Image 1 (cartoon, helix red, strand yellow):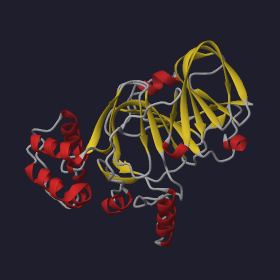
Image 2 (cartoon, rainbow, N blue to C red):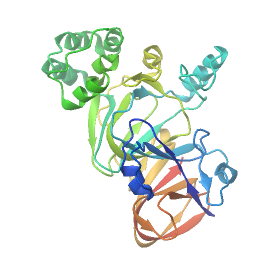
Image 3 (cartoon, helix red, strand yellow):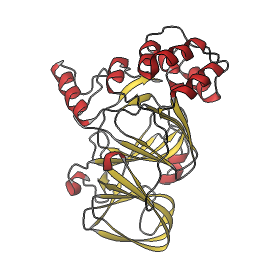
Image 4 (cartoon, rainbow, N blue to C red):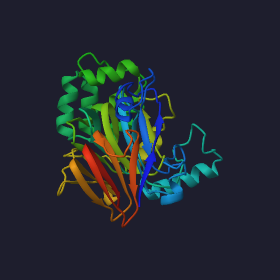
Length: 335
């Protein structure tokens, strides 16, 4: 059975004002339209075309699908492993922090692996770059003390030092993307850490994978984001929200990420640890889709007969559907 569902829009400050209204066939209203959620997550659950909660059909979904559009950088952040999430959630419960307490890092006991597929040109920071090349880059910024600290102590030691600094770095010789973050978040301690990460420029259709421990930040652009159905975010900077650098250093994976961009296998992009996958389906007439696992079909271009611009299709395992039209559709499948 194919179920048509409507998602929920989130109006975060960093959102773009035009991309999502255009995609969803709604009038732009001057507000930032940051994310469109499709899933059963309690923060913004989807509903079927009959008005019933999607969870009444699927049960709790293990993944959450979003269309994201950012005009300003998101927070510098990472996510825990399943074991770290279980321990952190229990620890904060024992400390008496309510689930809506702004000091919380762990709002559930689940991991939050992520993948982002660019729908427009997309700019992001993703995982740590090679130390030697980063040292030379810091020297080019005229950050000689930072270059020396990284060269002497490596990524882990550098982060301990960088998060302990209270003076703002000089951004005069830094690239435009870092200067822009500095203008929005002057004096932020994450500014010294950001240059250690891979600065990634994605063309439409290219993707990045964000497993547990990956330190990252989205800077600009629109994309399809698929993730575990969790709300656990450990923030390191670039945000007025709760920042916990001690927990970041406990959770972060400082292994060098040599190839931040994902390579599809057989036309399919696989998420971290096989938690989910994404396949692009270009419809020029009619396309049949069968689901072996829970699947969310999201249109990002063109039109599909019988599907409103602000609807998606959910298939349960064993279900199938035919889509007619001229459109780009993404099949997001649970692992």
